[in-house]
Amino acid sequence: MKDKQAQQDGLRLDKWLWAARFYKTRALAVDEISKGRVEINGQSVKPSRDMKLGDRVRLRQGVVEREVIVRGLSHVRGPAPQAQALYEETPESIAKREQTAEARRLAPEPAASIEQGRPTKQDRRRLAEWDRWSAQID
Image (cartoon, rainbow, N blue to C red; front, side, top):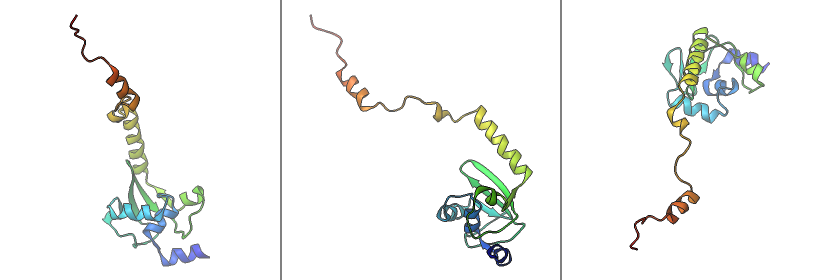
């Protein structure tokens, strides 16, 4: 009953993103929308924007960018299979996501390969004990 009412009345964007499991909380969804990382039909929107069936939503989750078409509206956050029924990802979005994942796999972030960073407290103590004056007056 509620789902049919949601389809007729519309649903806030932030609540839909939360129910479709794109973001863990509505507050995170509001932050991402406010930062301009979510667009509907190519336009920047506010968190209170009403969703309609057939809307194209472009969103970014970290480095992953997706474009989905709204197929259902729900006021409740259900299990993952139910949430995935609320949208359909476009084929172009799937292909682009796979390309970027492959690019990240082949050319990882250079900073991630740094194994040795700042010395630990124990390392600093060892450096302090090291005899810096190797020349002796004998």
